[in-house]
Image (cartoon, rainbow, N blue to C red; front, side, top):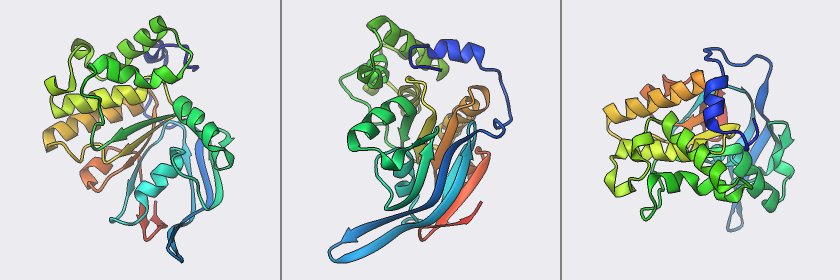
Length: 247
């Protein structure tokens, strides 16, 4: 669906399904490695990662601190480039993109959800959600329709005018999820999205993400240290010392 169609329309037209779409690979990593330079020393962070993620999947990415989880998430989101290997997302070889191409690609294809909500305190919920759309060619009317649909999907239609200081932590994370959804991205990337929430609120957010995956068929990759959070995913990938050790 193009960005010109509203999420509200998407919500009505996409049938509910508990099955990952068959034979439709959204993410393909082939021999992906990432090395950073520390002084004169090369420090390997990821080594020969090979994995495919189907469109409509929900993948939990687990591993100890320093295993390369966030680095891998950054590669998937076009925030960093691999040192070697081939990275294809939605049919595009993004490891060959320039910085400007990646910026445009991210705006059209990726929604980010972080542990800390990164909301602008001087903006209302609806204005925070609208921010990614300011990089598009949508009209003001179209942007408002997208924002209203995204807030409705996360159950916050009645909080559109509220500011972050007037919201609970769980509500702030829902606003952040709506912001990630508003451009109808191919891929949702989540970095410890419940790490700053109490268990009850975390379970509500995880249930929402599971619903977005199952009913809206959103493809989600979630970094987490929490096995209970990982239980909400369809599949779990384990990283250790930069290598994929178990699927």
